[in-house]
Image (tube, rainbow, N blue to C red; front, side):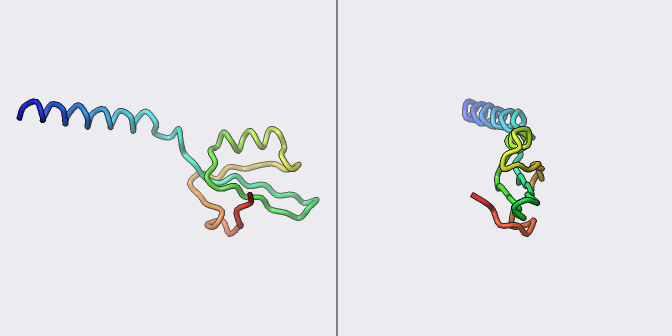
Length: 82
């Protein structure tokens, strides 16, 4: 019985360490951009801030890209674009 408690404690503690180590690193949201030239709004669901920053640096589709943590395209009222 004592061994089972120790195993459960170690497994639970290891799980907490894993969750704590990833806290905030995998936050997702949407990446949005607007093209005045094409009168188009772009919205990418489930992106990380790093992915969005990369598209902004590259000026993909000739627009500036902005990250919105914890949001979805639907919540922002913009259809997700492929």
